[in-house]
Image 1 (tube, rainbow, N blue to C red):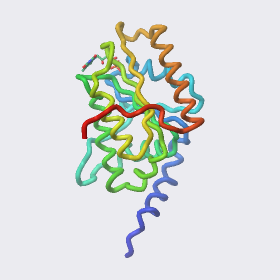
Image 2: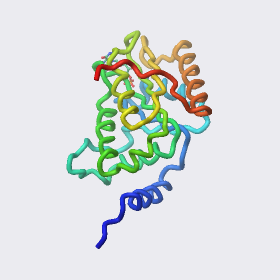
Image 3: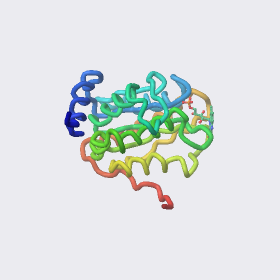
Image 4: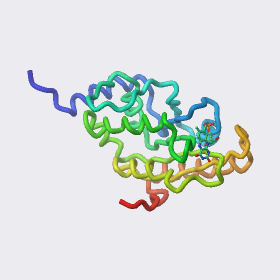
Length: 208
Ligand SMILES: Cc1cc2nc3c(=O)[nH]c(=O)nc-3n(C[C@H](O)[C@H](O)[C@H](O)COP(=O)(O)O)c2cc1C
């Protein structure tokens, strides 16, 4: 029997999965070890200002680590990737754990490899999106290396880099007026990008 061309397989998947989550302009992906922690609070404060946004908490989904033999096709990764492909803007939200993204977020990022191999069409369909990151920590500023994996991965998939909002939580789970103000400013930036898609900021300088 003839192999189905990749585009047909892709369209079949999209049609099947579209009914799971209705499309939204902004898709948030939260990877934190607490459901209602600092990162969730700051992310909610940003999304509150946006009309069409849906937040996916990775702790509610089953997403297995990357497998070279593509053994995890039935988990929640592809439906989430399809949802991202139907949006205009993707916001990754991660606490800073030991100077890097959370383990939950890293598992998700490793799975993006699926979009460069078995699901290339889906990977290519991310190219017109803008990607941002919301990060929280207890430090005043994030480590200089934190933004790079997000910005570089966006660049790899041909997506625009929208920049990072970092919230410093001196008091645990306390949204200060400053944090609320920076969330509102970041939301305004996102709204402008949704209206006139263009690079919001220059990716951080990274040695090749
Ligand atoms: C495992 C772990 C590692 C952490 N590592 C750092 C760190 O490297 N730098 C920092 O400033 N804060 C660090 N923190 C503090 C968190 O980044 C901070 O409390 C964050 O806002 C927590 O977000 P959450 O409530 O979504 O988990 C760490 C906290 C945990 C639990």
